[in-house]
Length: 401
Image (cartoon, rainbow, N blue to C red):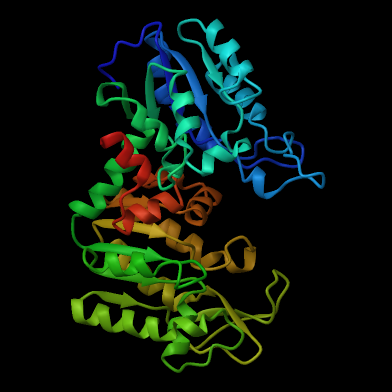
């Protein structure tokens, strides 16, 4: 991308502006928009005429009662407004994606100007990876850039199919995508040891492939969150009303055995903050060990667990963190996740390379205002997970091929 002569050329960029908005259409977290800015400024300063494409939500899964798309709730118009504010320059907006309004506004673009097209998912061709639609969109630009890491694991028209209509000299990764791939490859291909993975979240089933793949590269895997209780139940411990995937207990035992066989320390919590109900107003108690009393559910890791996990974290040279340690959205059950976030930040300060990926982990690190205190925060949830599982991402393959 940096070697291209883009003056007066049309550059199509797939960005990820799938950002959260409140009921009034006000963007509540503009991180993904802000992270696209270096690529845009680089190209704009060289005189490129920039055309942005993005999705927002799942509009075809949330149709209005008459079967039509809710074009107010799912419009990218607020993203165009926010981008204008962040860049301090006017960003044009087209009311369609590749239609008459898009073509009309592209024809009027001047060097350095930016146009955002309407939500790609207003069109069923997007998720179907329709090659005819993808080819028609490709003709809107002279170059194509993929800078939407959060969508790279999807074979959609604007994330992968479209790239195949550009030769290698006319397609590339943007700055954000390049950083995402380089940082993920740094921990997977050449990690400095000891290498620790911190995995949380609700279900073992969501992390099976990740745990299995990381066992080939990690020294320690720390397990927290709701999925820990499936491991406990599998080993015969009482877990009260805690979350448990009954059909995954054999799998949990096999993962424990697999770790032992490979010489990887699979570290489970030693205690929990147990609650009478799934509520911030619940009665709580710190358990003495891994067992949870009848009528209670484990919603956070306890003090002994925090102490042990911190020891592993602070002795590490490479860390991946994916998934919270408890229900951090509720104040009563946020302390474990916050303690781990602060330990990861401390490890970073001491020279450890730390990669935080996955929606909830990113939300947690942001909640505790530590996003600038770790080495890299990934913008991709599912994409980062699949990359760490060793899978080829369609959006990456389409650029490299």
